[in-house]
Structures are given as C-alpha cells and as structure tokens.
Image (cartoon, rainbow, N blue to C red; front, side, top):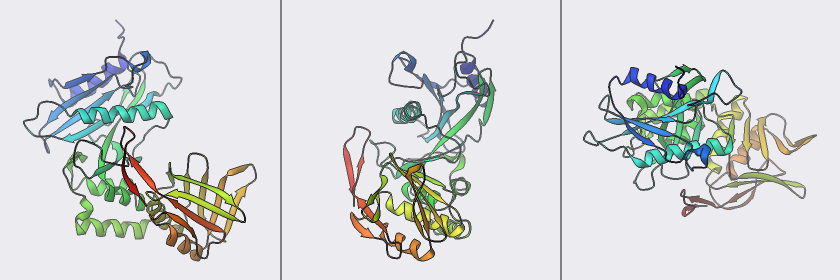
Length: 347
C-alpha cells in the first residue's frame, strides 16, 4: 500500500534511527499553510536529550514535501531541507520551549514569503534577542548541517537537516569579518553539538578565541561575498554619489570590506532597491550600461582607508577622504521586535 505521507515517514524513520523507541513532544499546526493558516510548518518534534549537555533537539516538518510530490525538481524535496534546533534545557524540564517553536515558524515564514532559502554557512542578524521574553545575548543565527542527522533520500527527493545555531552579536561580527565555517569549527570546541544556550556569554570573551579570530581574519580575510542589507542604497547627488546605510550595519560593512578588498576579493551590498559592488584597483565610481541600479566602486588603498573612516554608527553625511566623489550618509537604525515595536535606536 502506498503511503500518503512518504516525506513525513522518511523523516520519522531518520529520527527513529537516532532515537529508537523515544516518543517526542510534538507540536502540530491546527490550520495548514496550504489551507490559509499562518504557520508554514505542519509540525515540530522535540526530543529531550541529556548528552553531551541537557537539551531539546527540535526537528521541523514542512520545509520539504511531506505528502505527494508537487515541485518540478525531482532531486530535492520542497526547499530541500528541514530545520533542526538544539536548545539548552533543564534536566527536569518536560515541556519544550514555545519560543523556539515560534522562532522556527518565523524562519519558515521568511522562506515561504521571500523565496530566499538557507544553506550551510548562511547567516542572519536577528536585530534583537532571539527570544523576546528572555534576557539573552543570542542575537543572530548561522546554519550548518545537523551533525547527527545529516541528509536523507526520500521518495520526494533529498532532504538535508539544517541546524539553526544561535550566536551572540560579537560572534556574528566574527563570522562576517572571518568565516562562518571556520568560526563554527572553533565554536563546536566550546559548545558540543552547537546547542543554543540563551544564558551563555560570548565565546569571544575568551582571549584565546578572540586571538584565533583576529589571526584568521588577518591571514584568511573574510569569506562573506555578499551582504543583504535592508538599510542600504545609493543615489546620484549632483556630481557626487551618495551611499546611504543604517548606523546598525555601517561597522559590519567596514569590517567586511577590510576582510575582502585587501585580499583581492569583491564585496557586494544588496539593498531593497539598488546594489553596489566594491573591489580593489584603479579608482572608479560608476555604473555599467544597462545596469543603472548597480553601482561599481573600485577603490585604491587610500580610497578604502578614507571610506572606512566614515563607516561609523553615527548619523550624518560625510565625505570619504581620498574617495571623492563618494559621500556616505549614515541614518539612524530602529531595531524592532517581531510586533514592530522600536526596542532600540542606533546612531
């Protein structure tokens, strides 16, 4: 008899191999997304763990094709992945954290609404605490293949289990200035299975970790080729070209430029309506024919130094010394919670 839920069954089989005989706490969705419901995930299973540290191992159902095959891609099921999330728990805790379920639904909603999917070594700045009802330094996430579940083949195509890893703002800066992959290899030495712990401090507070990151940045540069920024754009301003960006992202752009251009790599900034690509060489600012919304900026060492001087989290308009005709306008950033309330102003 052919199963009506071949994708779901394949996920269950993978979890049974890892957790034989264990009954998870499963949170289901009452009204499915396909029927007009607000939550893209049909369910999330939480498995209680005691090793190597007590934690919940959450696994989603809904990013892949759980029922019949619908997409035209025979090799991948749905988006090609399901989220996993490991959250530190009290050994006596019997109910899974609802905030984690809501967060996974929000990630899924972002993918379904924007069409932007996640892969290993992708990253996301959350612009605030990962859990609003907790005091925590975890303010960003990166993605990696789940070290225990890996990837599976299903009747609807391949599915990778993509683990969400919560990190602090300092750690996120390190991934941008250096490398998500390299930083995760460093992080797992301190946090087995990359369990997200809302109560932990930044590992960059450790002098040895900070020195390793600095050395990696100096030797390897940054692996971040593109920054997608909600607070970025550019426009002609008479004989000048004005770069406009939020105070929140200006220091990150500076760090990433410093980790890219001196190593002969480009950096692309993608804003909502325009983009700019930066590279090193003979100075040039302009657009290519037929691509008037894409600014090309080629910087000498002197021009790069001048641009870095004005990429600071302070509102105002400043000329970039040695990089005329570039001027930089830094605008105040408003950090909002998921309900749209302003919780912090930068700049």
